[in-house]
Length: 298
Image (spheres, rainbow, N blue to C red):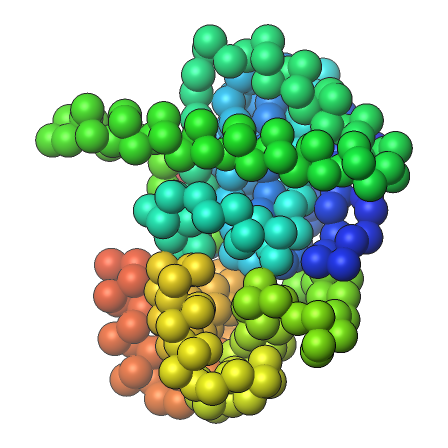
């Protein structure tokens, strides 16, 4: 069983865990970027449509508002994990392609044997930093994690450029609960990152309703044009596209985990009609809603 530690900050909850992964029996979400580093054994993460096995020496990163769960591991496995507060992550100005891929639901995996010993040592120190609850150590941790993700992004960009036309990178894409990440910030101290946090959490709570860009902007206390520009610059997608992604995630879970009719699922997810749901689902997943719920034949 993994040991979990965490600290609340003005911009969210920083959390670390280490040990044998816990098997999750339901998909869950939390508003953070999750990092996983496997020391030994393996860890299989399930997302809608696909699952991924993370092997020793691999660093994985994904956007944890995409529904996910640990579905498999083995006796003797040992992993390090970290939940990075979303508002803090957005301040780091990482390469836009890297950030966009995360927010579009991809699980990014780096396999770099040259960094194995360094990463093992680094994650062990980071867990100690989180447990220490010392502000200076936490800031040092953030600086080091920022640098590590920048290296990860640069390595993937270089590998992608070198492998055009070749074998794809091993990077792809996924009862909910939310962590207490959305800690209030006084309006006179709110930064653009706080506004993004408010918009993201508002969408996460209301995406099944008839939500508009104006609704999202109003909740964050900004003009719709500013909200749209800020959201797109950070996430690499529009507010409307993000709402659609959340609805698709909900619908996929309902298709595979319940016996509700496709009409009911379409309406519950916020699509408004079966026709609209069918079109968006087919475009995203390359199959119809009815075929997605058929059990896989072995």
